[in-house]
Image (tube, rainbow, N blue to C red; front, side, top):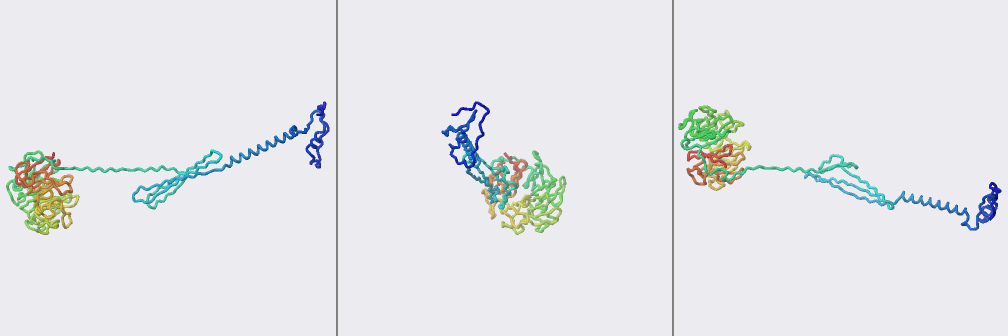
Length: 474
């Protein structure tokens, strides 16, 4: 190796740059040409071994930097553009109309897309909620507008309606088997009809004493309201075998004056009456009657219905009319569905616009709807046959309904009172003993009428024993 120049500022001659035609010289020659001049302070030299040459070292270092840059670019490209796999799941929601008449279905689909890179842990989840934004009419032609990203909470509300029915069941044994005499033989003679007013005052048709009696609740003595005790007559102040009495809302009385073949109106507190039906006397004309036994009053229209016993018909008299209209029967005596046989009682029933008729000699209780041409059976014999079984009657004479529409029947020749649950045709004996008559207070002898007070105590007109008995409800 040559010695360095001792002059630190002497660099020698300028280095010669090879001309273009010398570019092809070998590396050794070029190194010799470049470095053959000495530098007195510092000089470069390319040694025969390439590894000891600084130029080679710098070239290798530059190549390494270049490779590193290329590798970084490639890695960045791989991260920026990963290959992906896509999983698509689909959930279907079906809405079924709750209306029983609807047959259409509404289907809502929800799609979830999940994207995952092969070389990176990247998950993208997209949820699309398809929900109605309009009112959905659940009919067979339902149209639903579906809009994404709308959240609607759909709640089904079920309403349970509970219906509670309260029933009153009255069976045998609900009344005392032994009655109490309210009015006896010293005051009554073959009495017939019974009725209560709103204050539980009892009215009695004292038939063979030719008068109407009044007995207030808890009273011990009855008083005469119409007629004269023991005296019959046809004048305005007298009666002849009255069999029935009805009251209007003001306490005025309507009296079936049987043997005078008329209906008397007796104002409250009056001493005489006025004839309102049967002014023509005995007969079968529209202004005549033949032994009227029972009457019923429609207080809403002041219409009077009369059981015209001897003419086998029911007559209707409007207030103030001098003659009536036949509304049932009048087709001869008989048990056919268009006939009546000795009707002794009648009740107008507002709820059904019909008449309940005691058809005594056909041994049944029937219903005749106003305007109809025939009747339907309520209880008793359809053919008109008497009997003593639970489904039969023997000459019924009086009826009454309680507030729950149960029926009570005075079954004359069976000497009993029969009770029928509403709508039933099989009765139960609640007073008396079937086929047995007697004078003790547990027996009856030809009962003719029944009545109920506000407490459902049962009252019986025990005709041949000349008394009215009270059977307390237990």
